[in-house]
Image (cartoon, rainbow, N blue to C red; front, side):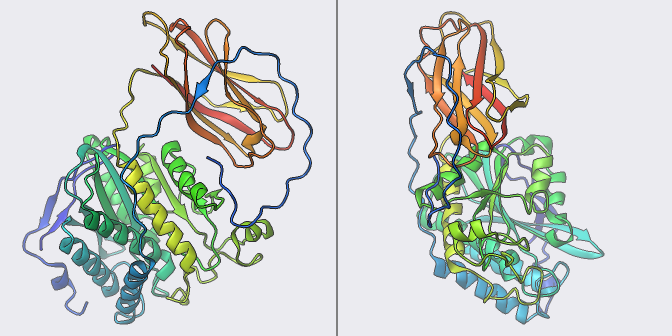
Length: 470
């Protein structure tokens, strides 16, 4: 096998390999080597003040956008994911107790994953880099087919710290991504977008491998990646269910999965900027992912809704020698593995190209707590006739209790189209979705506004962005 450097990728992507060492095998280098329902009832919310009355508005019928059904994602067998963890554990035991960068255990881990992917029909390449005086490797695997100009890339770091085998951090993410890739092969999936999977080296030294990969992507290839999905620690023994708060479409995909199985999620903050999604995000590539928690402490409220033990870390063996096969919660690993497959199947199913022209406002607008309505405007110009009967209104509002929010679209003539009412039972955070409005009676050109009002006390937020697609 030749060691080759994978090419470039971004919003959609394709692979371009650069050979770094003809005829040299890896083995030769080291001869020895929609709102979530709760699983457990959430604590009742304190009594709220009654929503303030809103001025009367003229409402038009609003319908949710039609959903394009993708092939059904498979259930990822937990036994298969754990079998990969067992292999990684054995590799560590046979190579000084770890799988760290520059050690024989890491190279053996790369060889194990690569062998599985090669046998399953993937095109694999190994990117070589140097860090701390040692050679590191990224493994990249491409599934044949799909639009090479639209790539969904899923990844996890394969290295451990030197203290131990790194079974949760990050054997869990690596094993789940591997088994998802193998499930793609078993299904002989033919998605609309191109699928790529990656295992990064030297993450524990500061995301060295993923930084190297992104830095060496030509700009055209970066622009081909529709999204990078990162999975770093997804089987923590005292788990939480965290979703990255980055790209709205990716975030909502994961939230939809968990809402469907009745598990509430929270926004991931502990690892923000500390894992392999960070270099992609910095490069302007949409990112998302899952996380089950590291050394932060689980609160009583979190234990009530997720189970587990409050007052203890999500992973007491984080970066420690006890991060072994015993340091995994099977239920969290199972759910998160299935969520990865759901996201891969869903996000790769159809083109993301907008159906028409997009008018967008990216300026943040603060929404006062229990205060007056605020607006954000976009100006539409140069069109003829009226707006469409299926005007798409994409909304990204960050808020700690979205049930407080009333949202309207205001047409240029002042007509209000109700997108969302307030609801005391809507306890999730954020409003990140697309509404469809019959605006065919409205002249297209003019100033359109998104109006948002917080109608009850205690929670805060802001309009992150919104867009109209004609």
